[in-house]
Image (cartoon, rainbow, N blue to C red; front, side):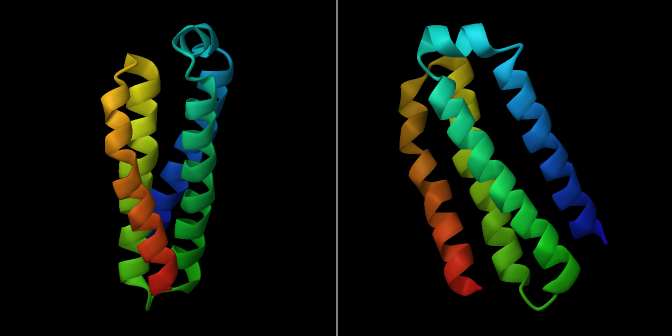
Amino acid sequence: MTSVRIAALLCFLAVALGAFGAHSLKQILETHGMLDVWNKAVLYHFIHALALLVLALFGAANRSTWWLLFAGIFIFSGSLYVMALTNLRWLGAITPIGGLCFLAGWAWL
C-alpha cells in the first residue's frame, strides 16, 4: 500500500508542478529559456508516475521495474526541474542517467 501512496503523491506533484510552471514560474522559465525543459520534465514525471500507480496496484511481481521507474522520475525529471529553475545547464549531463533508468524499467517489465 505504501507504493500506491508514493505513486499517488508523485501524480499529485506532477499536476502541481505542471500548473506551477505554467503560471507562477512561467516568466522565470521563459527568461531562462527553460519552459520546454520544465514541460518535458512534467510530461515524463506524470507518465511514469501513472505507470508506478498501475504497477503498485497490479504488478506486485515487478518491484524492480517500480524502483527503476521511480529512480528515473527522481533523476530525469528532478535534474530537469532543478536545471530549469537554476539555469545550471551542466545538470543536463545527469538527465540521461534517469533516461537509462526509464529504459531499464520498461525493459525489465
